Image 1: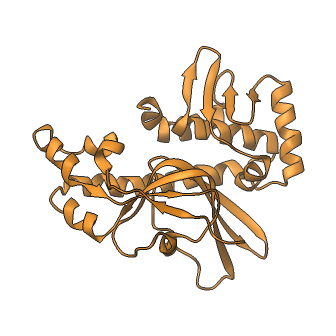
Image 2: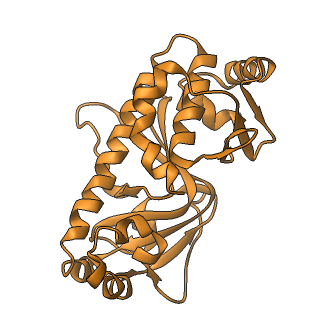
Image 3: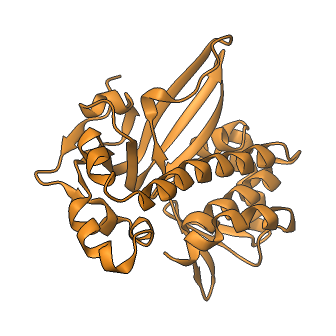
Length: 250
């Protein structure tokens, strides 16, 4: 199967306008100029297997900033995979992800829904040098991703698959969810196969666990929206604070 098609937007995007949290790092008196200066190529990646940053047509620079969409990164040994969900606001360098030189690891990327990214290339790197405050924010994004991975590791060590799924959905809601009168809503297209990779379980087991969560009134979904009722699992609350501020700003 070929890699996902990549299309280039005809005009560059203003990265700080697309991601206001990054703009907040710049003092008010310099912010408007920074927003105009910090532009980067904008690209769309179609759903399907993805060949990584090299498939975008450039190398070097800071990396790729996800503006919208959803992708999954799988790392495995002998067909057994762990997975990471990547979405809005995440910063990555797909062709330079750390791998163990002593283990036969394979890495796969796939695009879950159409994904829009900013290629923070060498030209962007030169432009951003005028605004050293942004360096802290970009480093913070990379650190945030490692924190999210540590939460994922804690979740997959729970014994029961239904508990893992419940914790995972609340963890994702802390990053990308919205509070409504009928619960916390998470708008992500998550198939049972994707969820199985994220919680280190088999797909049929995930289907059964989701049915149990639905029966208990904790989760309901139409395939596009997940509505979480009640409060986050008590075990997850310390971890949920990791993403709480970003979720509250969306």
